[in-house]
Length: 352
Image 1 (cartoon, rainbow, N blue to C red):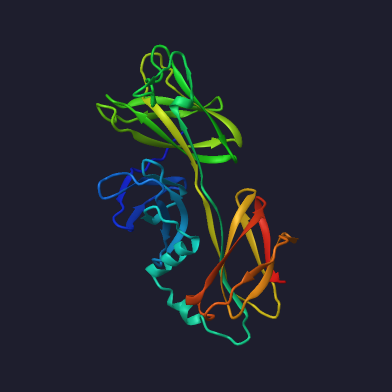
Image 2 (cartoon, rainbow, N blue to C red):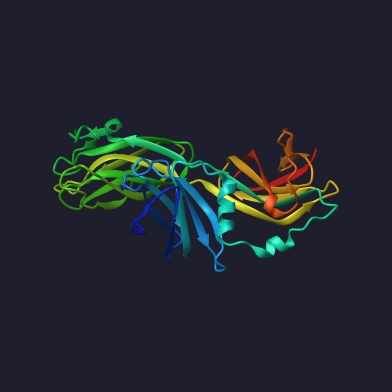
């Protein structure tokens, strides 16, 4: 299996936010990752990180978001060629509309402002809707894994002894994930004297061979190696070993499995809802689950509405609160939860 690797970028967070421009010729399954650190080079846990794509018109479009792990590491995968911008904050809660508006502040769309006029016969204008779901994170430590062929715990019982060697020992993690698909696996390891190779099996099938680069002479720090793995829904086994019969691999401390959040904005091209007309959207999603549905709108009065998905009513009554004006600068956001099926879904918004 060929691995595509992009060298880690270190991004410091000073005060509240920082910007770092990432300009890489990424292939369709490219990966960008790095670490968020503070002024004293300490990793920042649970820092919010947003990835923007820079278009040919130099617009900034938010496409993905995630949070850092305990070592300050973030990762974005499945990226195509292009120019990207990364923004990070300390442990602040970022609403999805803040991400969109922050991107617009980088470059004001004057055309949209000119087209945003008040019409007497308009009741509701919906600019765009966003579908998203949160990221999945699962952490597993070596002390909770299955050790085989004389494998022991070392370094205050936080790492395994070196894997492989003459005795061909190994460590296997039993993991449980809520949905099938591709996950980013961050491997915590130590290799104190030199680069050391190891292999990974997923559910009994060989995934590939990897190199753990030398970390330090004294095990006071560790490295994080990231690879992509395909997992089944529910129980999975992940085995680390080196079966060449003589060379030891690195010491394994644990793994972290992450599945990046889904985030997609559907522009409705400033559709106007009037005379009790319905607004419909054909949305395609990668899997069956509950999604957050975020509507960006303006309205000249409070309006009650319902939502149908594939002609099935959600059996909830929602309300658009009136905005200050019908200009885009005064837009509000209404957020609801929708259960969607994998593939195409017809979403209809209509008056009660």
